[in-house]
Image 1 (tube, rainbow, N blue to C red):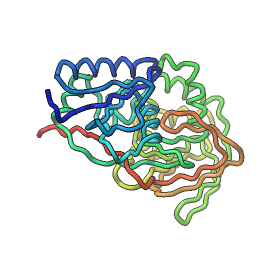
Image 2: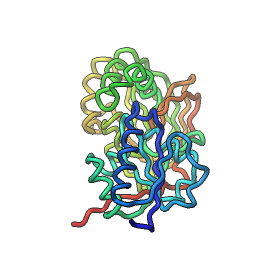
Image 3: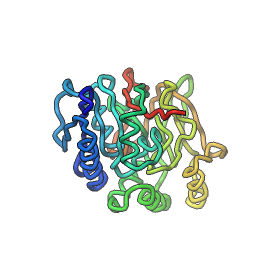
Amino acid sequence: MDSSKNIAILCHKLSGNGKGLSIARETAGILDNLGINHTLFINQWPNDFLSFSEIWISGGDGTIHHYINKYNPEQWPVALIGGGTGNDLKTFLYGKNNIEDHIRNLLNHYNDDYIDLGNCNGILYANSLGIGFDGDVLKNMMSIRKIGGHLGYLIAVIKTIFTFREKTFVVSFSDKKLKIQPVILAVSNSRLTGGGFIIAPKASLMDGYLDLMYTDPLPWWKRLWVLPKVEKGNHLLLSSVHHEHVQQIQIKPTSEVMFQIDGELMSADKFDIKIHDKKLKLRLVKLPE
């Protein structure tokens, strides 16, 4: 047994319609077989992790979102093991792999590093923030939550394409002040959202910037044409799509709008967004060459 390791496994039993709990229990079983000290926390997480060497989070972006808003994100190294609806941040960081290989890599081939976090109205996020259209997509996705993942998001996007009505926003960043009526308005930290849509193909988790992406107003038929390009990350070449790297931005809609932040649905009538002053300490995999 590796006595230097004592791993806290965190999950919410409803994450990924129960998949997060299933992955957490499978992980605990694998660690048992390997003789690695660990404790599984389901829903009720401890006040601190002083007796643990690292934290493994089973769930999707929403579970990670809960962690970074509850604890000091820089204090303990955190590994992501998946189990959520979309798993966008986990996929971006580690790729797609089976749980046994992923666990062995986390135990044997790793280094700790820090990634940026976004801050929207005092709420931290690790992966993505989507305003307006994205909020409506997530609201529509609630009715098909059991499908989940990329397919569920795609179905919700197609439904929203025909019903969404653009609102007016005033967007202020650097020395610019713009009045826009976007279909898509996103301020991303990572590249992926919605179970694999490459919403921010130029995003880096370690560059000290967030990626602002917004579109012009688009009729429904053009939205259908743009969607496959967003899915593959080819949309930044379109004249109707605009992209900026920002460290701080203010977004003011004419009325309250829905938005998603790391897959959590909320609403607001103003958005003060910036790079957070603290980073998230992550256990990353570094395979030998």
